[in-house]
Length: 358
Ligand code: SF4
Ligand code: SF4
Image (cartoon, rainbow, N blue to C red; front, side):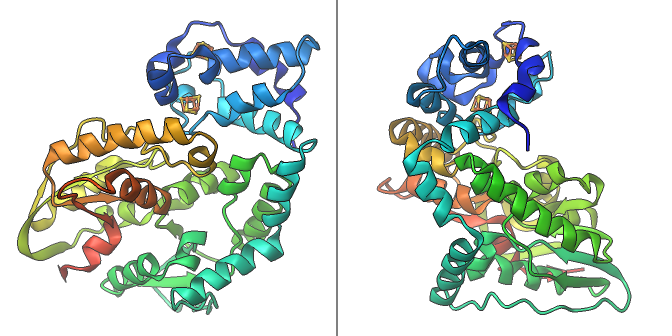
């Protein structure tokens, strides 16, 4: 587990060029340099030199981050800001009473039991059955926490994949991908989940790991196995089917921050009959939910959701699609109370509602 001091050289690599300001959604709505990588690095540099304490105020700015990774993609020094913020948050959280309560709730026993209860409420057993592959393409399904708690996304994924006779879906008892723990600065729990998941991945034969959640996809790609992890949308785009809808609909798509392959989504929508795809303005801008971000920054989250809602409404779409359970919540809350809001749907549930033709 890396400490903040392990990132001293990375922090010092920041040239203060300010390019991260141009892409950071939080800087765009606050105009506050402390909310973007550059300003946070100035504070953390002060902490490492001993000039500043890792205080509640600095942690407030660390929490003011969507973990969208846009600053990393645009940083000429290639600094992975999120990793540095996670290490700093962990050091702060270890000494903070409320963080200790959150960490206790995130323990494997309590966290998994919460998911089981949610799964039962939503009439889904979280029991996993192992289907050993006999032939064909072996897809190891990474069942995320949302799939455990909410039945519709997983049912839709299985329905769509049932149209591919060459696919053998393998199911295992994975832990959470760890994204919610990183969000809280709970690096110990993240490492525990990662270890269990890597053990399963190392002891299972598969061709690809498939996920229906952009955040799980990003977390798994950061473990290792990068080439083997595919989003369900990439699989469908590479193995195209025709999706026949029985009425004309206009759809738009919100790209989750961590979804890697947006082109795959566009390719799929081209194969949807009676569907018109309208690209909304700022389709890749965060919906403002981002896990704990919405709880810790309610006003900022509301501002981002309002921007997103206006862009969705301007598209005049009947349905807004996405590929992340957290974004579904963010989009629904963004559109709550609006006049004639479009329906919010997971892309795979949308595809599963069509007649699927070879
Ligand atoms: S883009 Fe990178 S180098 Fe430039 S100010 Fe931001 S963090 Fe520093
Ligand atoms: S990860 Fe996203 S929200 Fe956080 S500092 Fe970077 S660009 Fe801003």
